Image 1 (cartoon, rainbow, N blue to C red):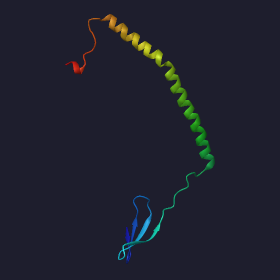
Image 2 (cartoon, one colour; image 1 turned 135 degrees about the vertical axis):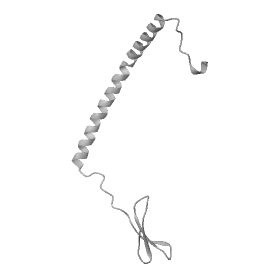
Image 3 (cartoon, rainbow, N blue to C red; image 1 turned 45 degrees about the vertical axis):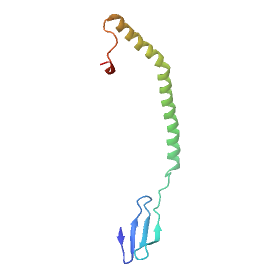
Image 4 (cartoon, rainbow, N blue to C red; image 1 turned 180 degrees about the horizontal axis):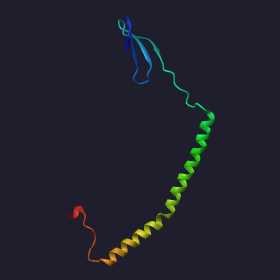
Length: 101
């Protein structure tokens, strides 16, 4: 914040604009918006990035699809292992829950 004779120079916290405010009249005399950088600096680099992103998304989808396909096999193996443990030690019974105490 800078001060001159009758003007206060304040930077807006929301949009970073520079406001010049007259102290005696309490009005905004002028404002200057900050220059925004261009959203895309190099068009060729941006196109290459977008094409690479498509391949990355396809690869992530394939990993998720393969994991989903094998999920039933994994669950069956876990169930078989737990069933085997239950048959080996039938006296143990189900685990005790906190609510049972």
